[in-house]
Amino acid sequence: MNAEWATVRNVLVMRLDNIGDVVMTGPMLRSLKEALPGSRLTLMASPGGAAAAPLLPWVDDVLVWRAMWQQLGTGRADPAREMELIGMLRERKFDAAVILTSFSQTPHPPALACLLAGIPLRLGESKERAPGLLTHQPLSPTPETEHQAERNLRLIETAGVSVRSRALEVHISEEARSRASALVPQPYLLLNPFASCSARTYPPSLAGRAARLIAERTGFKVAVTGVDKDRERCRDLLAELGEHGVDLLGRTDLPTFAALIAASRLVLTNNTSALHLADATRTPVLATYSGTDYESQWRPRHAPARLLRRPTPCHPCYAFQCPYDLECLDFSPEEVAGAGLDLLTASHTLAAR
Image (cartoon, rainbow, N blue to C red; front, side, top):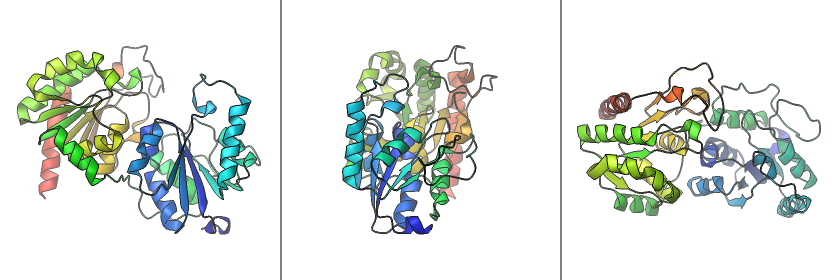
């Protein structure tokens, strides 16, 4: 480890995106904790992303903050609020800050806040050089196609941190497992039909039909997950599932959701947090994976998995709304169900060996 980092004991880790992004920090947090025994890791996360903190046992404290630079143009410039952030960081007397970003984000606004707060070591990655804001950064940019967990690990390796395992991992409490087991009878598949943006969402009615076809072949129940505001747009999906469906909309916190994923025979989802939780729990997962991102950026690396996507010339678009009728997700329910049944068969065979 670099000499400057070897004595670090109070570390701020900033990841101000969604739940899945925070789950992807797990290997990096674990590696930091192993490399710096006795250190204190504080995760600074968005209100949504902070929900993942209970799943990451290496986190000692959580700061919840809605950063202006992460609000996609909707943030309001408020100098007093930015000074509040700097003051809060200064009070914590951090030795170092690890600023995690995707390939399209800049670490410079949070690095400036950390500099003004007196944090001496600031590790981040940017395509643009801004001397003085970051004290440590990779010598060359990480390829755009790199997996997000690998991007995070490559960053701390820049500081000389050794990495024992690169796999995603989450801790699920016995309490969460108990709550999950009381919600749906075994065996079941978990259907998580929505994503954070419409461009990543396979039509829910078709997803419901695919899940029903799998249920009819296997006898599994279908646990339908989502937040309570999804209920109206789930009406047709739940009607399609009929007696096969178990309505869990709005009935789970994130640890219980993770426990449901861990205990399911198969997860059917889009490119969203359920995909990453399935990888972390080694649960077979079938994803209708839109063309918004490269598969290599987010695909499961350790769980049995299959990603379905039609090739399109607009891939990757990184769009929130698709202007082309989701051609990249043009799959019939029968195709999706067939892929799910194949994955179930393969996973059962592998588990039996």
